[in-house]
Length: 310
Ligand SMILES: Nc1ncnc2c1ncn2[C@@H]1O[C@H](COP(=O)(O)OP(=O)(O)O)[C@@H](O)[C@H]1O
Ligand SMILES: [Mg+2]
Image: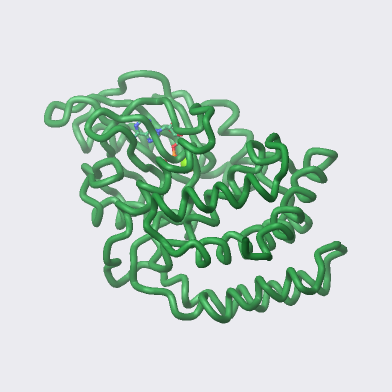
């Protein structure tokens, strides 16, 4: 039986409550069953991300691989669909899937992630090139981001009214205009959906490969916004947030071969959404206290500085 890491147990219990406890109790049994079914033996320490455990394994046909089992949540169900479409181009290979258990057997790459690279320009360039590679036609059956546009707009209105915040009307209006003008007409292109540096791992077959996709169909420029907001701590450390943010956008748009203005508008929307989400729910890396205030303030400033073209 595998030992589930304590930190993973704790965060799952905090986030999911009783259903989380029930799932955690079953998890070692699920892992054993899948190891048996796929002819794998454990090969190293179990690790984890936010929602899944990763068990390094060996298998006769592939050699090294990892077994990923995620908490059953609607946001996790299209991950194997995305891997299957990419077929190893820009992302790890999918060897097996068991949708009922939200489990996959994946190509094992190195444990080191793009988040360990210090140079922000390099991080953004690598992520953008991966984003470009992943932008292929999306099959039917994946969630269309354009179908969420109405809900996004409604949420923006509600947040702006209900929450105590200091974002100017102009900033919130710009975000709402992005949803109206770009949100509803997105193409059927497969996008990662959670593109940040910890979801890009060092590999040998290609220098870097993506893991942990949401598998959405939508505008590839959306991922630029996800990446930019995920760089909060790095951008905060830079002198001149506005300048650093715009430079990050320039680099991303060029390396991802996307329209700069489109990337800016999506990033501005992400920043406004983050500013509101932080006030409602906190962030995964800060649920309260001065750290949350600092990140919320960062999201405000980022939203503000991305509202103007440069
Ligand atoms: N294919 C893989 N090969 C090696 N390590 C992996 C692989 N997939 C995930 N990992 C490790 O596990 C961590 C969490 O994986 P991830 O798929 O991002 O889970 P989560 O959905 O919980 O965020 C990664 O940051 C990485 O360290
Ligand atoms: Mg992850």
